Image 1 (tube, helix red, strand yellow):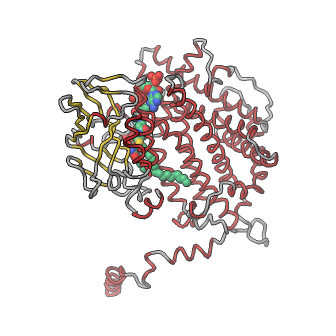
Image 2 (cartoon, rainbow, N blue to C red):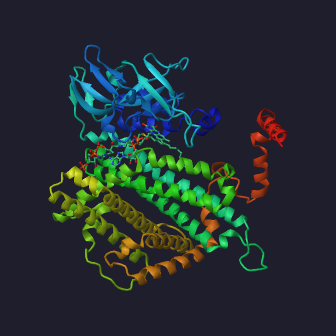
Length: 572
Ligand SMILES: CCCCCCCCCCCCCCCCCC(=O)SCCNC(=O)CCNC(=O)[C@H](O)C(C)(C)COP(=O)(O)OP(=O)(O)OC[C@H]1O[C@@H](n2cnc3c(N)ncnc32)[C@H](O)[C@@H]1OP(=O)(O)O
Ligand SMILES: Cc1cc2nc3c(=O)[nH]c(=O)nc-3n(C[C@H](O)[C@H](O)[C@H](O)COP(=O)(O)OP(=O)(O)OC[C@H]3O[C@@H](n4cnc5c(N)ncnc54)[C@H](O)[C@@H]3O)c2cc1C
């Protein structure tokens, strides 16, 4: 339904209705409010947008300018866009599709501001879809990709909504205007945490799609001569092609398993929060922010590697890869811009490091921070052993977190304010947080391949893939591992040769590994990645459908080229 609507109109999109608007009602509305709106949303009797970002603020939620001022005399909130930069800007579906929106606005009651809260606002008539009184709506114009979605803008001119339209599961405003505090001010952000978690699976699926396309095409495409006189080989026989594609394939599996963990964590921690136990919220936020940032960034880069590995046809929309790249690029910005999200994870790591320094035993995804010895124990390591590889990634992350935190402490000891010390160490902090997330992904991948219930022959293939992913990470970031002597140059050489062996070992299973994603041609939308491998015939059919081929001589010849040619010939 959603997909049909999204493709049908070519200018409407209800993706955000499903992934942001409806979950916001589920997570932030009271039981009373759910009775009023949740079924309407689930049955698509109303269509919603998640209207938080403004023209002037997306990252800094506390800086949003839209206001919701409580009027006790009428028991209403007045929603207003006081400045141009307060215009809601970017929300998917806001331009032309949605007739409702959850609007994030600064809550004012009794003259005091209580920060950003979510409000349900009807924005279009259910009769004729015209904007409601006081509401100005529109589309923000063409984007890099996803132009089937009407990311829109909205302005509110003192629009009045009933008090009951404030989503009041956590915070409340009583009829007389009294504000009732939530258990944590960050619960208003809970749907962002949820959505970031889902981005990990979106990234895995996007990278799975791209590697399916590129691996299948690399078995169809024959090019050049590996040995003089021999037939042109499949391009997947070239080690360089394997080095491009197999680490991306391994990352797709790694992120798929990481999303399983994320979903399980989100479920159990929000379950405890329902019972009032907020203790897991900080870890959930740090994990979802870091994983979202890491997996979407690696995925966007990985899709472009797959695109380049398909040569000219990869650059054609026939391949499906440019659209995939555009979508994945959006995931790096939307739902929390990647740098800002990784800094949130860094903030949590610095806090945990300080706690471990004070003697607290750390648990969860940061437990390794207190377990890892600062002084490296150099020596010939077995670089094909998963336990050795996981330990190397954890040592690297612990060292980088310690280094960034100590650097910051040093800046503060020199008299810098905490915020200035933070800013002047933020590049180190980002790298440390990335190393932390990378070590989590490796550990989770290793634990999953060792415990998942599969046939032993399948486990062997997944283990090779996990080794490949880890060895690729070590060779790509060798400096981090060499820095304190934890790994030696010999270890790095051993890692490189094991990596080459893994490329050769994965090659025979490469097609089976992408087929296992079970992505139908209709989902892949790629001539190069077709299950039947009949690329060339369908590439020709695809090209013939180009609008430019509707006429043999295009009208532009008569309008521009013909007079231009004539005048140039006349000058000869
Ligand atoms: C085949 C598949 C193909 C797939 C590919 C194709 C896909 C195509 C689709 C195209 C894209 C689709 C778009 C999807 C939807 C996008 C929707 C949006 O963007 S919606 C808009 C998305 N917009 C955004 O995401 C906005 C991003 N910005 C933010 O979230 C916040 O402003 C902030 C977190 C950056 C700062 O917040 P601030 O209030 O300034 O807080 P401070 O920093 O001062 O930290 C103070 C304390 O609070 C703590 N804490 C913070 N947050 C949380 C939390 N959530 N929870 C718990 N705790 C939290 C923090 O740790 C700290 O703790 P402590 O250290 O003191 O103990
Ligand atoms: C395809 C797409 C769909 C979207 N859908 C929605 C939607 O449905 N609803 C919605 O509300 N929003 C939506 N958004 C908006 C999105 O959430 C914001 O664009 C995103 O949160 C980034 O905020 P920003 O645009 O203000 O970027 P900015 O924060 O202005 O980022 C610009 C630069 O500033 C840097 N920066 C900002 N703050 C810091 C900091 N503290 N430290 C270091 N560097 C910093 C960033 O790293 C970045 O390099 C969508 C965006 C896209 C691209």
